Amino acid sequence: MILKNIAVIGAGASGMMAAIAAAENARVCLFEKNEFPGRKLLQTGNGKCNFLNESDPLPHFRGSLSDSGILSAVFEKYDRDRILRLFSSFGLLYHKKNGGYYPRSDSAASVNDILIEVLKDRGVLFHPQVQVKGIEKREGSFYLDLFHLKHNKRSKDETPFDAVIVATGGKAAPKTGSTGDGYYFAEKFGLSVARPLPALTRLLSPDPFFNDNTVRAYVSVKLFIDDSFSASSKGELQVNAGGPSGICIFDLSGRASRALKEGRSCRISVDFLPELEEDEVFSLLKKRADKIREEDPPTALFTGIFSERLSVNICEKLENLLFKGRSFHGILNDTLIKDVSNLIKNMCFEITGTGEFVISQVTSGGISAECLNPDLSSKKVPGLYFTGECLDADGDCGGFNLHFAWASGLTAGVAASA
Image: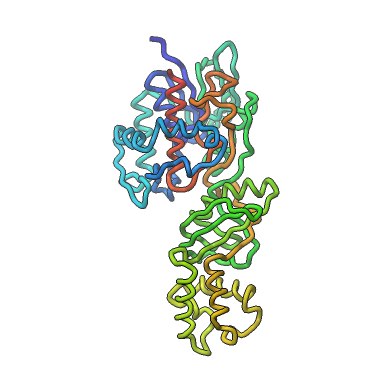
């Protein structure tokens, strides 16, 4: 049997998985800008690598692949259980905590090392510190224009490849090598690319509430675009200088990023006590108010409820919205407590921007579903495949984006080598 020659561009999570899948039935060359595979993978989950989630991934994604049904087909074939079985067959021990799956070592290096070992076992030829500058197709075969970073030398590789899998990532975390190369290749072949924007990143707000990098609180957050509800999320809020951060904010950032680029208005509503109803908050604050002495500051209303620093921030917000220079003690009545309760459950902040790609975890936007077949091959260029973050599909925090990396890499790798 004559084996196909397949080139995989990019040795991130989806690229390694694509190479592993393709190498079962083909000769595979894996090209990577960095000295070693998986540089971005090593940073995931704060280095612990939350590589899957127990939840259905589909509701946690946005983008044209989600809307088109391609994403559904990819996840149906490579669901959570199948990915877990695959990693077990590779030799990875894992455990589950808080709904996420992690390597037993709680180290992303364990996942990366296992994948590198499987690449070697399957005979994948790894080309480190080689940047693919261009892809050309002629007479049914693909040829690569290469730049050897170590030697500062450009060369035309005359190896004919039967298929090329582009797994170059998006534009987030560019220090790991994700600089939007896949979009360049796609556009050169006339494929449509939805504008790449930062996602899983912080939000920016001019509100003086965001003035300290040490305040954290468990909250529920709602995002409103043009005053219409868009999405919600729960988790730890980080009150960073210049705007909010934290996982609950990251999950909303992709939507906010796209809306702001379209010139639409954005705001978030924060519930600082999501485990309580508003009447319960009122009762709680009423009891606190009965214990406050004349010499106590306004923050005493939140003693035992919020941290001292968060109480200060909230009271500064209340001063602007409710107190307005009046004596706190002179107006501390049921009406004020009701207003405070409402604000604790629904404190709004204007959002004016997001973090840049350099501090973002993933990219929103990318190569559009309209250009792709269900196996992630190009409709226009047979033999050209795309996987992972360079596609128009971005998910929430919690292992969902890595699930898509594994599933899309397997989909493209199997199809390319068939």
